[in-house]
Amino acid sequence: MKHYFRVSPAPIKKRSFLSAWLSDFSITGWLIFFNILFFIIFLVLAAFLKEEATNLFALQANNLFENGYLWTLITSMFIHASFFHLFVNMFSLFFIGRFLEMLIGRKRFFWMYIFSGIFAGLFFAGLSYLFGGNALGARIFGSPEDFAVGASGAIFAVAGVLALLTPKNRVYLIAGPLIAIILQAIIAIIVKSEAILSIVNIALTFYIFLAIFSMLSFNRALTKISLPIEMPFWLLPIVAIIPLVVIGLFFKLPIGNMAHLGGFIAGALYGIYLRLKYKRKTRMISEYFSR
Image (tube, rainbow, N blue to C red):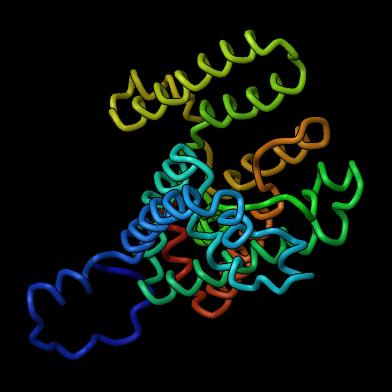
C-alpha cells in the first residue's frame, strides 16, 4: 500500500501466503473487524450480565475518576450501542480511515487512532465530571453518570487530521440519518402519546434503513435519499459538531458531542505536527487533493 510518509523500504523477506495476507490487510480493515467482533461479544455479555456489562465496559466519568475504571477508555472505543450506531461509524471509518492510512502509513495511523480515541474519552469524561453536575452543564458536556460508547471520537480524529492535510478535498456529510436521530430525540421529549411516538419511531427507523440502503447502492439518484451534503474537508468537523452542540442546549441528544470535539482536537494537533515536520510532503498532499 502506497503512502506519503514512508522513510525507507523494508528488506524483502519470503512470507507465507497467510502472513502476507495478514500483513497486507489494512489497519482500517482490522479496526473494523475488531469493532464488529467486540460488538458481538458485548451483546453476548449483555445477555448474561445485563446492565453490569455496560457498567464494566462503557465509559462513565464517575466510574473512571472515582472507581478507577481506566480500561473503559479502551473498551468503550470498540463497543457500540446498536447495529445502526456500529454501521454508521464503520461506514465512515472505511472511507476516511483508508484514505488517511494511505497518506500517513499503517503504524502512524494505528497509533494516532488509538491515542486520539483515548484522548477523546478523557476529554468527554473530564468535562462531564467537572461541569456536568447541573442541568445546563449536563446538556453541554454530558452528565458524569452518562455512559459513552463508540468509535466516533477516534473517527473525528481521522477527520481532524484530514482537515489539516487535505483541507480543500471535497467530501460528503450524510445528513439524512443524523437528522432522523435528532428528530427522534426531540419528538420523544415533545410528544407524550405512546401511540404517536411508536408510529413516528417506526417511520424514522424505516427512513434510516432506507438511507443506509441508498448509500450502499452507489446509485446517484438513490443516494439523494440520504441527503449527502458536499463540502471541503476543513468544514466537515465544524458542521458535524457545532450544530449538535447548539441543539443539545435545548434537547438532550444521544450523541457524545464532547467526545467528538476531543477527537477532532487530537486529530487536528497531529495534523499540525505533520505539517510542521513534513512541510514539503504535506504541501504536496494538500495541493494534489485541492484539484
